[in-house]
Length: 188
Length: 128
Image (cartoon, rainbow over all chains, first blue to last red; front, side):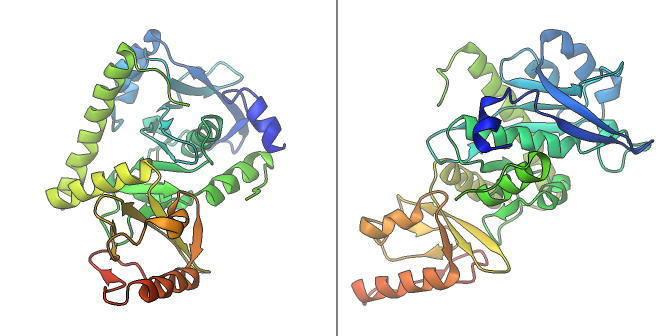
């Protein structure tokens, strides 16, 4: 897929692949705008262990909040949820995003459902950065327990030497994530 | 580019602030001081506005926020005003300087302002 093709496609229905850990099966997921009807699920028992459990039930009814669900099959649970940030000026990073995998998909969950949810959320942010006129770069805040996740995806901690509070995905690393998933290459 | 603000944006901002407060609390629990958290917020505002310099070599990639009001890189202090003029173009988001390139830039600055300290590490671990 070329960059032009990527940007012309619906960013929510690109093939976001997850792996069902119980079987090893690869499944395709897609993003959908969340609605007020998702408040019950995101505020329910299954999401009680989520870091941002208190805000998701209110975020779901706002434009710019997306849920990741399996594209096929009967499992319609929200596998991950995110709030899209914004690119404030050309070439600036996407900032102000919030994302979280469902508690049963997070590292350490037992049994853990799907692998690759966090990576899918970040890829959607990279595409959003490009669609808003950015270069694919992302600036996020990381909680202490999330720094390892971000680093594994290629984010760097900024500023160097400070407490690892903010994490930054460079344009180069952003495109590596796109190439890994869809073959989109980096063209500086 | 940016959407026009509406009532939903205000609610979204409030919810986002609540989420950030959750992260703040976790960092405090991990031992971060209020000064560190405030410095981190400043750095984020600068990054978000595109003020940063990226240093790269073969092993690592460092990003340092630039504060245009005070003429400092957070992590490296530079002579006042050095970021103005032609060299400012090196400090836009996405520009990638190798560490040798940065050192060359610093040498050029030293020639322009020999009476000023060219570089002073005030915090952080930048390797320039």
